[in-house]
Length: 279
Image 1 (cartoon, helix red, strand yellow):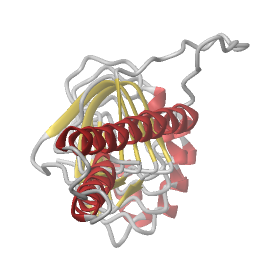
Image 2 (cartoon, rainbow, N blue to C red):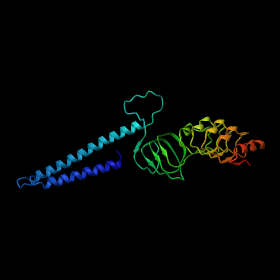
Image 3 (cartoon, rainbow, N blue to C red):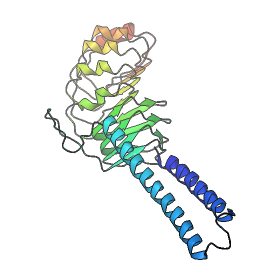
Image 4 (spheres, rainbow, N blue to C red):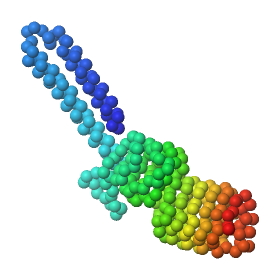
């Protein structure tokens, strides 16, 4: 139960309590002349106290159920629970459910939330879990630490920007983002593109410029959605023939590499409908 639902429920009980008080106060059996004012005041006070007590119990019970539900979805162990795996258990400071957060806070579990994030900002955060969340705008993430996305929907572009971070490999969590559309990994120390890149079926833009890449794997042909490939300023001598299977590729930037002129001409034959920049 979200905070807004609790507020509505609280106001409803409060209105019902006041209405019952008014009906009780104007009841002719209560206001008989022989009844003293002290007795009437005591009856009203008792009725109001019972109403507040019921509301307190209601809030206490709903908060317990909400926390248990969030713990279950986020895989957070309850007290006295036994952990049989060796994975570190993350305890989140807060749990936000069914809301429209304006920002993303560290050490937080978001469940059934809808995000309208700033498209011009790159977000980096630590120890955050998203469960069944919806991102309505284009999203750009930087380095994410101890973060998980479970059953989330990205209606716009999902961009991972890890430019100029002196990394020698692409972090493993990147390949878990199946909805990833743009990966920027320029100005790093990457030598080999891992085969796991083929898991990103929705990838349309891949920037590996200014690294130390020697060759591209033949499995890159499985990126059927790829439209732009940037591999300039690397150490590539030749591209695999399988690159001809990238039918959606429209732009290829590969200047400042170790390719020969005849290899460049061959690539042009493989990709006749692709704009190739190799100067």
